[in-house]
Length: 217
Image 1 (cartoon, helix red, strand yellow):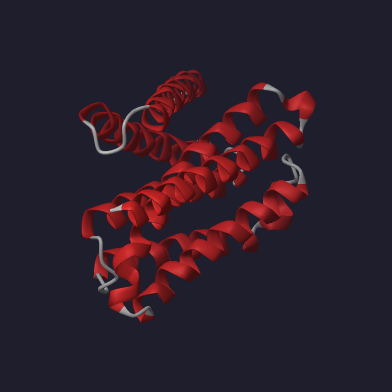
Image 2: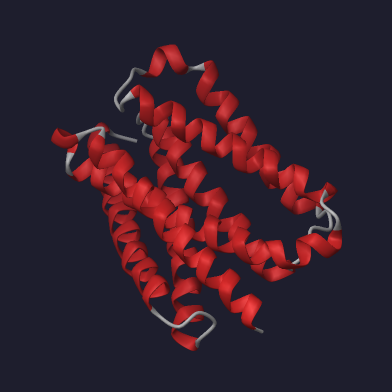
């Protein structure tokens, strides 16, 4: 395969990655602003997950095929895992162990180990504070997901709602951080971590609202 062909494929992969990520952000905004559990909310959620899968695939292609900076692997794995786990939380609504879920969680950890192993050779394109906080959050989420199987079932019967909210909004804010950090590099690291702060505040707000609604039932 010629250099020109590889360059064209690389550009096509970047365009697909950016397009899918941009539309996913729009879908995420629709999810946040529509009635929870409604038709538009559910449809936007499905579209968001499909587009997130495309973002993950093109991101992995960029890392392993076109040798882009490996930190893209971490931010891709973080958003992808949060989206997957958030979807599975809503789908199962229980903390009964599932082999597939455990396998995906362990695969995510292995991805982090891959990044740490090659840390010195990839360069610090993103701010160290962003890199370490992203790694820490991914490890924390995976640790929780593996530990939630020990939570008493009656207690988890209500916990899954807040877990779903936090993970899906975190997946959205992860994509938003990658977008703003890339589009506004001159404002790093603020353009990278402020969307995550915003996402955390929004998640807290929605969890409080869900708690009040649950208490009113």
